[in-house]
Length: 136
Image 1 (tube, rainbow, N blue to C red):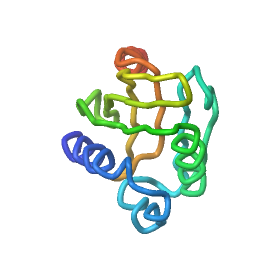
Image 2 (image 1 turned 90 degrees about the vertical axis):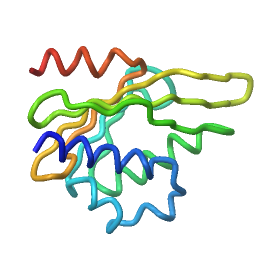
Image 3 (image 1 turned 180 degrees about the horizontal axis):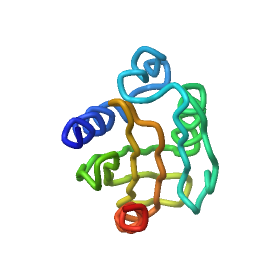
């Protein structure tokens, strides 16, 4: 099951930069449980927010992508971190007014029944690895 979970997260990252109008319930249900919980990174404009369900994921997309003049998320690594845990690392390239970032962020995904039920995002590459170790 864990390799299947890795593939689900990889497929999700393949669509992460899609426009909001493409984030239909049908598309989101390919990856996420309808009651998914998404916890944002601990710093920045969306610090420590929680988004719930498909509506929450669409709201997160509006809040995150809308805050930037330009931003892309480039997947770097996806790996198993336990039976139901997957770590994903993305390269964030963004520009907002005078601020420009090029950072690696990570997320710890929890999956059940081939669907993502929880995402905890981190503003560093190491964050998800440390969290997986604590949960494992």
